View 1 (cartoon, rainbow, N blue to C red):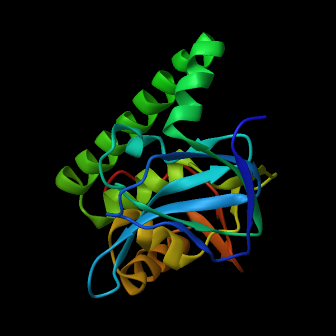
View 2 (view 1 turned 60 degrees about the horizontal axis):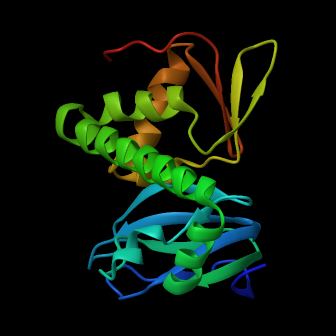
Length: 196
């Protein structure tokens, strides 16, 4: 195994946006959140990464980190330097294809998020997040699909709106019979309307 194995407690910042780095992190155990924050503390969440995946690949070009990463639970990572990643690419050419595919997938996700921010109102972005189920545990029930371990703040950070605005829209959808809310869960009862 290449790299240095490191453990991080819950809520540890592993990567800070803007810092120069040249390490790739392979997440062996746990999950992390990828996000950016402005000077006033407003946050946008780009996604979550779970064990078996990796992060930090954007800085392998020697540029600054494009986002911050924080642990959501205790995590274990193998941290590989740019040299170790290069050696691994030579030894395992299949990993190079995997890395390219992952970078493309993440670029598509970023493009879609930018498109939604520019072209959709808050309600449209909320619907996109609820229907995509990205990085959210789901469970099919007799009533519909339940999104688990999700809070109004989690959604607000994903759609670029205030928690209060998201709460108001969710309450309206609940009154309309489209969703059912519980503690850290939302059940989608029927197809959400494209306009509200």
